[in-house]
Image (tube, rainbow, N blue to C red; front, top):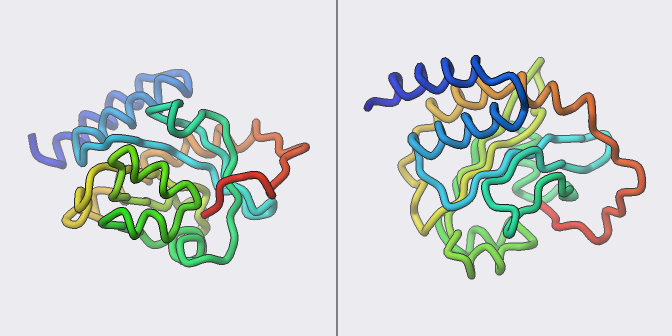
Length: 176
């Protein structure tokens, strides 16, 4: 099935899901059909707190649901969150360079990453993150990724209203 047909079917499925868990499952399925992945996470960007909150994970053993990550001014944060550009990491070195948990990810064979910023109202409100084996996203369509990100905006907006960052200690968090 071509990308347009997958996007149309994914949009139709997403529109029928009433709860967040069902919506994220539909997005996970769509991204798996478009790109394949060993891990998919969705993180809400909270720039006023220097944090990102994990709204969805396809594997809680690797990336627990609801967890936080600290953001900073490093290359990944500047690229994805600051400029809102898609980031592709091709190998374990790339993973280790931008993610503090890079060794753990690479040890699980998650050596490539496709980070897709989610834009709304002129700012980045989150990111969709796909990880898989080396080179998995080198030829990934950025146009298709941007369409999927736009489809996810309501999911991010709905989640933003319920976020509580009280008591979060950024010092002990993974960083991007």
